[in-house]
Amino acid sequence: MKPSADDSVLLAAPDYRRFIADLKIRVAAAQLSAARSVNRDLILLYWDIGRGIQEKQHAHGWGDSVVEMVAADLRRAFPESKSFSADNVWRMRQFYLAYSASEFLGQPVPEIASSGLAAGQLAILGQAVPEMRPGKPQAAPSSLGQLLILLAAVPWGQNLLILKKLTDPAARLFYLRATARFGWSRNVLLNQIKAGAYERAVTEKKTHNFPLALPEHLAEQADEMLKSTYNLEFLGLRRAVRERELEDRLISRLQSFLLELGYGFCFVGRQYRVALGAKEYFIDLLFYHRFLKALVAFDLKVGPFEPEFAGKMDFYLNVLNDRERGPGDQPSIGIILCAEKDDVEVEYALRAKANPIGVAAYTLQSKLPGELKGKLPTAKQLAGIVRAELEEGK
Image 1: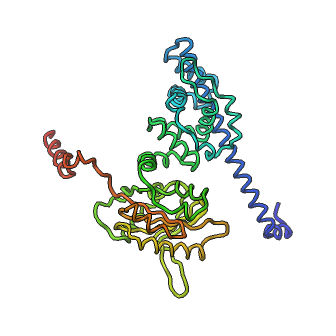
Image 2: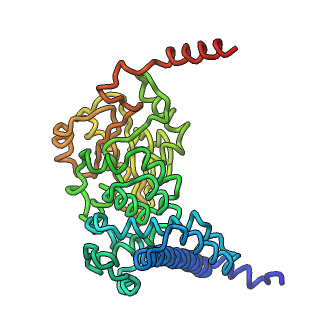
Image 3: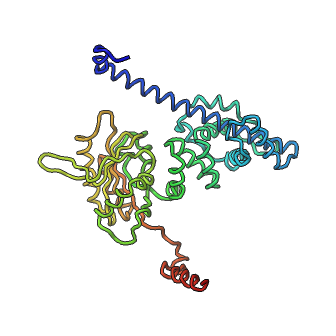
């Protein structure tokens, strides 16, 4: 049926447009909630299958062949499901064993509240928590229930990637928490693991003034957003470059740079122009962070940090807040990305700044351990070895 003239007026009415916009938000939220619910139920099912197999093996002395028997019977009963391959059922057992182990349950799990699931689900999940087997160290049911909430907030593929790539319980918890909170895809998660996000988070000190410039809850989120060091090895640089060339390389490999920055960054522009009276200024890179709801300005430096960089960034942030910040946005954040930094110097430079500013270093290539320097062949030597072997094989 074609819309009438009255319909056309209605479609153009601001009230109707707001009504439709609200409905779209509600539909999207309901779809996301449904997807999370399905994922939660699947993870709990897989946990229960793994638990059941392990308990039966322990109680009856069944061998490992029972795993493939269970998988085959489940496939016959549910031929439309692709979840019950022998490999996947083995993974369910591994999943249960890994996270029910006493050394893992001994780790603190304070991040459950930010996992994206309602805290009230703890009571529901607690009903599914099994008693620990006799002879095994006991864990408080609430601790295991909280752990299940976190595991159920992470898709199965990401859970398996964490199990496969990591053995340290604290590292697994770090990536589980980040994946649940920021919605990391498998590719983003893999990139973060390979880049050593956990190691950098626990061993390297972050330098910023966020607690002084932001409310406590926002300062914590901004701290999570910032890294102490950014790995720019993907740029392929092996020599000193000018700041504009560094910027050009980052823009040409923007997808890789966004992966290194972390989930939530949206690119706004390069050499972003802001005007103040008759003068204009240009910000190297400008992003918007979806979860912080704030503009994030990057100032790129090819040399070491200098105190005057902080003053320049503070000025940029004042202009952004006055001229560019949208309604409901949080204060703009600045990140000075430089080749190296002295933490004490940074602390003094940021102490009196009213705007939130972080200072981070970047690396352009992996560093060899000291004991290996000079002991590995160069690319030229390797090429010579390959050529010699090819000629020998002719």
